[in-house]
Image (cartoon, rainbow, N blue to C red; front, top):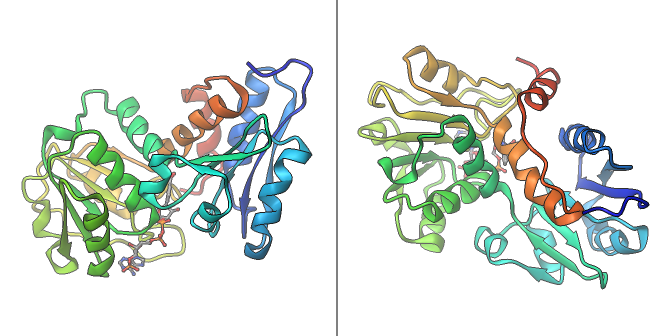
Length: 282
Ligand SMILES: NC(=O)c1ccc[n+]([C@@H]2O[C@H](COP(=O)([O-])OP(=O)(O)OC[C@H]3O[C@@H](n4cnc5c(N)ncnc54)[C@H](OP(=O)(O)O)[C@@H]3O)[C@@H](O)[C@H]2O)c1
């Protein structure tokens, strides 16, 4: 439990960083839990990352989140990286330990799975094949999470096939890389399809994916959360598929960070979602 007489400090390091929704989320929880503290956006240029991370302890920070472009670079700076972050090859959360050393993990996979479990309580990873579109950082977290949850088959499809092959090589098991041209057909018999590309994000073109072969009850998920409903999700919803947007993943990945920094377990409530949704363009 956080010390009642301490001003709690945490933040997010990114470059740029002012678009981040994390300060809104964490400051909501600080207020909700009646804790004195603040969570700040920290604009840190790549060449300043090591010094900024080392400054966390003397400044009294409990830790920080990392966003683009720091998630991979930080692996070489922190003192201890757990097995999840090592497997994914990226850090999302740094924890300052009592002796000042820096521990690190990746909570994106936890966020992805918890978001599905909250919104689709009957969901199980082994219900049928999952199709994952994209092979960037988000895809690595999603593939790792699905494999950990017991998925038997993950059809991984990316515009650049080699990146998908690399994930299949790194994680092995159920993950099979398929060429981009096969994405429409790959939906056949799937229990779930996840967009992890940046396609559909505000300012980007839509994901080109024909949903004709997607079974009627398959879950369609997008990790993009700006806008809340991408054109891919809208198309899935119109044909009756259950859908999940990327906001839940963002909210849930923040919960274990809080546990590690402040010893408190915050919840993702309908009120929190509504507050966050108001700040996201439709
Ligand atoms: N909800 C959350 O908590 C959460 C967490 C992480 C990420 N995200 C979101 O997920 C999205 C991806 O993030 P990331 O970090 O994984 O990015 P990333 O590492 O840069 O990967 C981008 C992915 O998009 C693909 N892509 C880009 N342009 C494309 C195009 N024109 N056609 C087809 N594929 C294209 C890339 O394919 P190539 O390999 O061929 O370039 C790659 O697979 C972003 O919108 C991000 O905000 C959300």
